[in-house]
Amino acid sequence: MTASRLTAAGRTARRVRLVPVVLAVGGSLLLAGCGDQTDGANGGGGGGKGELNAMLPDKIRSSGVVKVGTDAAYKPMEYKEGARIVGLDVDLAEAMGKKLGVRFEFTNGTFDGLITSMQTGRFDMIMSAMTDTRDRQEGLDEKGKKAGKGVDFVDYLSAGSSILVRKGNPDKIESVDQMCGKKVATQRGTTSHEILKKQTKKCVADGEKKITVEAYDTDDEARVRLKTGAVVADVSDFPVAANAAKSGSDFEVVGDQMQSAPYGMAVSKDNKKLRDALRAALDEIIEDGSYTKALEKWGVQDGGVKKAAINAGS
Image (cartoon, rainbow, N blue to C red):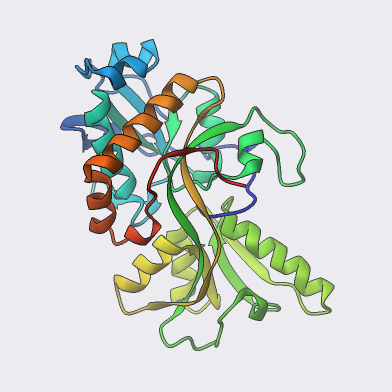
């Protein structure tokens, strides 16, 4: 979730009971669930025998499965449709799975606990509209202090944060500068959250009242608060805000995008074989057009990249 500073480690995932669901990715039945990854996922060999499959870590080549952590509450990137997890990230994983000869299994969890869960081995990678930032790369906390090992990113999309308001913009909000003294919602642990924290400090420094930031586990919860008029705005990633505005008559996007930055697939620093295999697979789907087709399906083609990059965030 979008740009700039974000805590990279030291975050604890909320524990919820696992509810398995079936998800189709790469032509296979995959296990997705609410909460932490469990044993017993439908593994099996992926059957890939090409160059890209040979790039993968031996464990993944043997199982034919890449375990992916996500927060499936960020439409159109990833979200629940009935019992299934769907969205752009799932479609891109499906396309890459065909190139790699493996299956991607998505597990649903709380966004600000995904890195910690990956570092403890619950899944192999994260694909959850996660912004590639230097803090995350280096494992720094909010104060810039070392809090973990950090992660590597394979960057696959560019997006900024946007302001979502009620239809007609009754509170006349056009920028974060107009939020001093007001209540604003966002998703906890995201860069949008960091943008609001910075703006709150600026409000106080300018002699104005601070922003009352209401941070929630999911952006869905933030939008519920906005819809009821309990807050004047929801700050979230542009693809998510634009989709919310497009999908109904309750909201509209105002102002310009803030701090555009790359989304990245996150992997552990010690898993460079998987990182490089993902980069190669992403380059192949960019070249064959399946990448652009997926972006157009979800209306986010403006954020497309021409080539995969490693740790291009700042």
